Amino acid sequence: MATATNPYTSRILGLLGDKPFLGVLESTPAKLQQHLERLGPQGLKKGYAPGKWTAGQIFCHLADAELAIGFRSRQAVVEPNHRIQPFDQDLWARNYARQDAAAAVKACIALRAWNLSFWRTLSAEDLARVAFHPERGDESVERILQMLAGHDLNHLAQLERIR
View 1 (tube, helix red, strand yellow):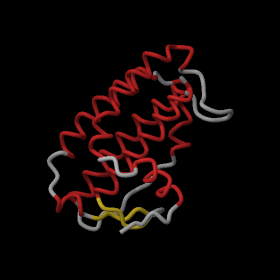
View 2: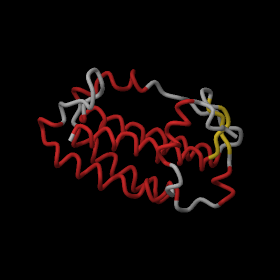
View 3: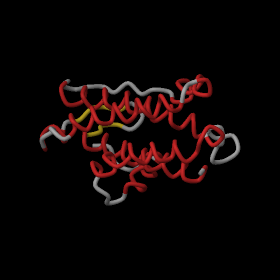
View 4: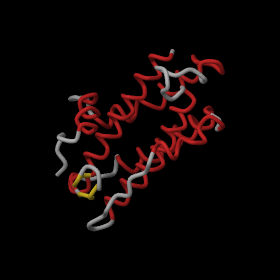
């Protein structure tokens, strides 16, 4: 099983701490909608630090991550010896500045609802199923979902800094 020896894994799991991952995953959509509304069109163009993604780009990234991790978690549950295909977030982000951040938030909310309906059905056995991540080693479905929850917290904190 993947341990927190990977620096990214350690940082993301550290953000999650002992919070229940499903609780974090359930609360994120409303927070994204609130950030979208509070930031407004001008706020979407602001980054949390020089050279970092803007709020609009973060929203697009979260929609893409939701799509990818939803698919990844389903594969890990049903496919024996599944090998995860990582994605290069920077390549995916090349068009984010031209994409509609509001549409990204709507997609994220809809995809999260669909993913949660799947994740809530998972048994302990399903959550324990393991897939191989080329950058992080073996990861259980539970670890994949913990990582997603920590990832949510990371980007929500960035959006808070922008706001």
